[in-house]
Amino acid sequence: MYLKKNVIAVIFLFLLVLLSVNVYSDGLYRVNENNIKSFRNVGTGKLYRVKVTRVIDGDTVEVLTDGKVTGLEARERVRLLGIDTPEIGREGKEDEKGAKEALRYLQGLVEGKEVYLAFDWDLRDRYGRLLAYIYLGNGECVNYRILENGLGKYLGRFRFQFMGEFQEAENRAKRGRKGLWR
Image (cartoon, rainbow, N blue to C red):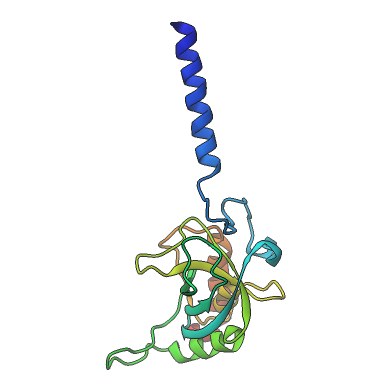
């Protein structure tokens, strides 16, 4: 009886470890799963390549995917992780201060271009948008660039891997009186 209980316990622990290792079966590169400590250490070689078809606002884009990843549509909206930019006025509302500037900046960086997506804990937000870090072909992180130029705010309300670095980028933009902090 004692041996039987130990065997069952070992099998249970083995299954638990096996399940925890394969939490994500979608094949998308997740920085938290790969224990990447800095946004600078993410190489584009393993990331998911997409084409940006439209910039919706300073922190949201529409992309075309290759359609080969289960759970992704051919066309997806992507919300940049860790940042929040001023809102473009919709339905008769005025634009928030800095909204057009953030929109134009993001358009200049990514619209019509191939970019690379890295993911974190949560794949989607409550609106169904993909949550991602966007990387340019040269390895630069778009999310971070928006913060360091003062065009968006650090969004620390939701957990993400590079929280410390992103918050520091906002603090430097504030000290330098850049963008929103002029």
